[in-house]
Length: 233
Image (cartoon, rainbow, N blue to C red):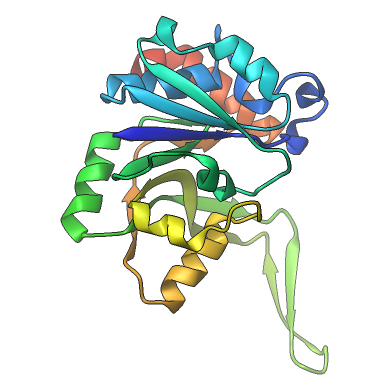
């Protein structure tokens, strides 16, 4: 199988760090988060990886090179303008078989093999790895009726959601939804596939996952990796 790493975002929530360093190259311990993703893919048997880059993409290409030091073959596709989360797939050639797509800034111990096995078992055209995320609101939340008359008050509520992990398994058929040169995100893909009753499934993962997009999560990721590096690479 072939893997695609999405690494074109500006990482605006991590500024000022990402003013000079693209988010996938942010270090956790003595390695970049992107390096962890590449090593995990290599360990799962992926031999060819394409990295979609945009913002500061030249730095990512200079750091990663052709992949030989990781034992994989790596090439790059550049976005001339932001194309959202999966828009760049339209510019990647030879996606003729089942392929994996992952963001380049997630720390997780998910088994790509088990994800693929689930995808094949259910006969999906798209499988989205999902994770239960608890969101705590640090304020009192008011509820009210249509006339703005308050009818309830919830002190610092907590909500649970199944969120996308930024890890996907796709069949080539999903490329039919993507128009070259136009921004297209996973959110649009989900809605379009649901409308057309195409086969799209959720794979609920219960291991470890963290998106390093926020400063607090970035710090957590560093501490987690330093204490349990063996779990990831």
